[in-house]
Amino acid sequence: MNLGVNPIIKNKKRVYVILSLLIALLLIVLFTKSKKTGEEEITCKVVKGPIEIKIHSSGQLESENSENIVLPTVLSSQNVRIYEIKITDLIEEGSVVDSGQYIATLDHKVIEEVLTAARLELEAAAAIIEDAKLDSNLSLSNYRDLIVNSRSDVEERKIVLAESVYESPSVIKKAEMDLSKAERKLNQDIKGIEMRQRQLRSQMERRNIDLRLKQQRVDDLLKLYDALIIKAPKPGMVIYAKDRFGIKIQIGSMLTPWSPIIATLPDMTKMISETFINEIDIAKIKVKQNVTLSIDAFPDKELKGEVISVANIGQPMPKSDSKVFEVNIRVFGSDPDLKPAMTTGNVIQTGAFTDKIFVPSEAVFETDSTRFVYVKKKKVIRQIVDLGDENEDYVIINKGVAEGEVLLLSEPENLDEIETTGWEIYQEQLKKTIENKQK
Image (cartoon, rainbow, N blue to C red):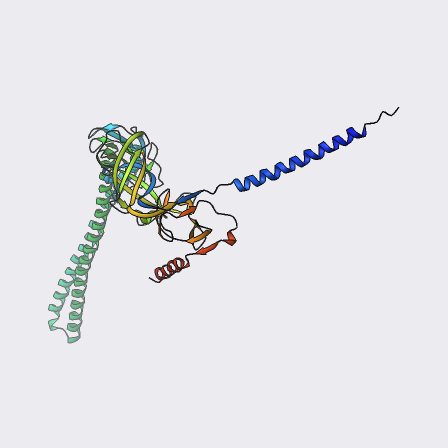
């Protein structure tokens, strides 16, 4: 008895497998074809009408006017010779104070040490002057004795000359010479004491100047010691200053006469927003431009303002090769909720046009030297364009397209087969670039 598989059944299974493979292959082909043919081109139309150009940035509120709380001015005196001093106590930032109210304490210990050394130097200088006076008196006394002796010698020589009148000519001549010699010595001694007196006066004056400087240093240090308790010059809210490294002042911070600000008392009725604009957009920012501000802490508030200053020199961004420029924006009016260091959102209106051609930014493509769009007509054309200002969503086109034309928002296939037009626009742009470089 044959127990093998029926040939008819075996053939049917084989047919089923082949049919299944063919159906699967057909579905793949149909799916692929439908996917290719079903892709829709995303397009937009060129629009003509009003458009606003705005630049968005974040900033930080600061007072436009403020009074600084600084180190005592006597610390800058050349006599003091203290080049840094530590803050040992400081009230909490944000505290509201009245005029004359306590702000901070500076390190007393360093002043005490310097003052002790200065007093010792003063005492040493005074002792030097007393010793110099004694030496001066002794030296001048010796010179006076010499003059007395010289005068006596001159008188004696005069007597000898008078008594030699009956002597031989040689004896008389010798007596005259001895008298002349004695008189010269007397004159020399008189001039010597005069020179010594001038020398001693000069030395004493220098010592007195040194003594006065040391006395002035002690006086300045005493004034500084009495001024180590810092008080508010007027009412206001205390805002800590920043040191030369950009770190906020705190207890333990070291201040110097060249960086003397401890804190500020801002005028809360006049606020500005300090922001930074990248080098690509800074040319669009001008003084007097209108600004709309929002406050992160109060999302429902909307404030108005204007640009009041634009930095001429940029500064590098941290961990980046690009540069930013500081821009200050005055906030119109006053609001009791506004506080220094609050974060603002700034929308700067750099341009408002009533009748311009513009397209979505996504419709503009570029190479290293050209900007172009893809215009959809009977066939797609790559059209070189001349761009104007732009905002976050749209860009103005000065030349190259007309209102109502349809543009692609993504690059089409077969780029090598697409014709490029508008080379005259490229030539104009190239000419302007060369002219600008030659200026």
